[in-house]
Each structure stands twice: as C-alpha cells, then as structure tokens.
Amino acid sequence: MIPLYDDNPTRHFPWVTTAFIALNVAVFLYELSLAEPGLTALFATYAFTAAHFFANPASPEQLITLVSATFLHGGWLHLLGNMLYLWIFGNNIEDRLGSVRFVLFYFIAGAIAVLAQAAFEPGSTVPLVGASGAIAGVLGGYVVLFPRARVITLIPIIFYLELAAIPAGFVIGFWFLMQIAQGVGSIADAAGTSNVAWWAHVGGFAFGALTLAPLAIRDGAARRRRSRR
Image (cartoon, rainbow, N blue to C red; front, side, top):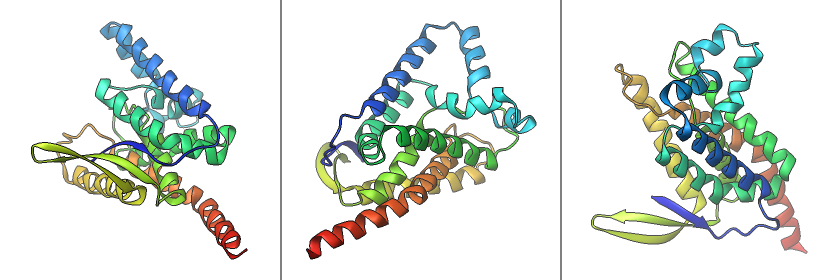
C-alpha cells in the first residue's frame, strides 16, 4: 500500500512541514554535490553512530547527531519515501500542535527513534541516517488523533493498481505492524543484512502515539460535549 494523500483538511498552511521537506531536499542535493571523501566526512560528523554516541554520550558533537541525522538520506528512494509520508501526515500534526510544539515534537521523536535503534545495536559502527524515525513519530500522533481520516492509497493488485480511500487507522496500523515484524526479523538476522533501522521506526511511532494520546482523549471528550448540546 502506498499512501498518496489524505482527506483531512487543515486550518493553516503547514509552514514547518514544508520547511522540513525543503531542508531535507537541500541537504540531499548537497550530498550529491560531494565527492566520496567529502560525503564520508559528512556522514562521519553528522550521522548518528551508536558506538560513537555511547562512548561519549554527553559530547555536544554526539548530541547534535540526534537531530542532524534526520536530515541526511542514503538515496533518492529513501528521501522521496520519507518526504511523501511527511507531507501527507505532517501537516495535520503541525496544524493541531502549532508550529513551535510541532518542531519540538518532531526533533524529540527523531532522537527517541535513533536511541531505540541504538538500544538494540549499541556497538554498531554503521551510520544511521534519515527522517523516518521522526516521521514515525508523526504517524503515531496521527493515528491517535485522526484514526478515521481517509487516506487515498495506491494498492498493487497482481497486474494492475487500485486506488482506495482507507481509514488512517488501518493504513498506519498495518505499516506499524510491518515495522515490528521486520524488527523482530532483524534480531534473528545474525548476518545483519538489513540496512533499515526498523526499531527506530517502532520507537518513534510509540513516542508519537503515547505523547499525543492525552490530546486525542481531550479532543474526543470535547466532541462528545458538543454533540450533546
């Protein structure tokens, strides 16, 4: 299933979401401009590496990577997939939280995500990059705030493609279950052949859902009060 857009309107233009997307694209274009030594140096400085972080977790240089890693990507598909999800679901979270709180929410989700992955691989020297952990936090927040919003989704069916309007709770819930399944599989993968940080996705999602659950409960109570009037 590939989500294309949702039918969940916003009250304000998503300036922060748009700025995040623009910044991610700009950083990736900068990556493309670098020769191999420069790109290696960029990742060594700004990607998150679990072994380096845990060797000196109070270091400002290592703490910065909790945020800077979310703006680095490993390829066009990595970037475009992340930006698609951020554009579809980020605008509603930004609209509900407001710009400042959304920025904080996004960066904390990203930091929690990489630490969740690092907890499973504390000695890893593989750089961890990408916005997917922070965006997973956005998905977790979206599914508790707007579970009934319809997501127009592209569904491959054998030799043709079908468009369907599917509740966000199902689309995002299915995505989350896939992350858990793949994460469990990565634990059993002794060869370490996966290059996807599945537990970062799980950790970011859990943070987003748990953090915004009280807001979802409050919104639900407000709707019930209005319906009784």
